[in-house]
Image (cartoon, rainbow, N blue to C red):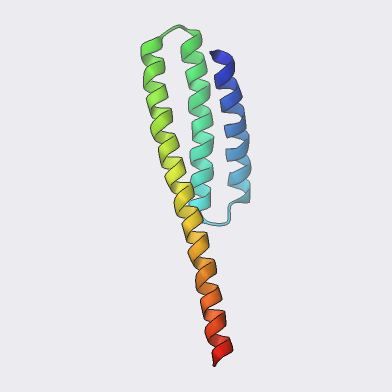
Length: 99
């Protein structure tokens, strides 16, 4: 079970750290921070499960699940923001062409 968490934690840490350095907006930085935080929590879950304390591990897993839901919602907001901002720019460009 520990190998699964290591495989989950390290990519999250790398993606989050890289995202923090490549962010272009506040929402993007927040999403990168949430992804990196998920990696930290996964590493904490590794240490808890290695000490064989399932009650603490269960709490960390619930925090991981809720954190993942928040990260996914943030990614959805970021994607919708990008979609509608591009759409608004295209609409303005079309209005300029008509006049």
